[in-house]
Image (cartoon, rainbow, N blue to C red; front, side, top):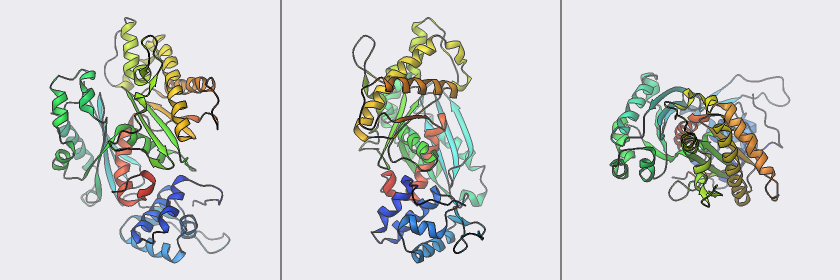
Length: 404
């Protein structure tokens, strides 16, 4: 069973207190479910202490959410001081969600349960995202994932989340798409088209924001309130958690850190993704007269890219260190998470060089943030796209900035 010491605070613990004063039953229910979700095995008494809700209120809420099939109770734990405690968990099969990422070179789809565990995964490679085909491709993946559920479980499928680059139509030509794809993507009403295709409620998220949220959830407690996140893929997907809130902004693209300007080698400032992304690595390989790798990233022979790979890591680390430094000055972040579609040893090399370059920058108040490696890699956007609809529907809306 989880036992939460008084001095250990997780950002998801704080959310309960922020909602309690409203006296709203639904808000309190969300606060209780949030505490259970991020403190598996928490007891009734610990929920009351962490949320600030009266024990009687917590007990009544637990009866309701258990009746709704959202929680399960473990065996009573005896032999401790005080009253016997019953550990409480989210019910893994209480609800499910599907998350999909529309990437520049691939589509990923995952089925997750109420506890955020990935139960099934589908992957589709393509040369570029085709607006004519994408709805059918996602629909086929959703049908395949639904088939892994029983008919009764399928009724508890809460929705479909889609993570994708914001304003994909503006950049699709840069990955070699046919010219007409720009207008096709601009005109595509993706959410209603997917809803008609799948019969599910559809939510659209920026890929960096979805991945950032998935990584925050994956961090062991106590989770930090402020996080900068980078996923190095064909471009750079990024996200920011500020005081427990996912920074989405009016267009859903507020933390577009890959477009933050850094010093270029010759022609002045460049967006960071022009230096630190996989597309930047490919440009370096082409300039060196090397043949360009084909197929999925995980099948590339990364060792064959040397010495170009080391040069790219060094330049990318310097660029990302400047982005982290400038962002940390604004939000006073505690943690910068670095992940990518590269093999883990290459992600580790990139992180080590980022730490080196951060140390060479001027000292800021509080020092540079801790640089840590991500846990989810290329699947982070799809996982986050599945987790966010569940979070929005059942847990505390305040924390993720997800009122609606």
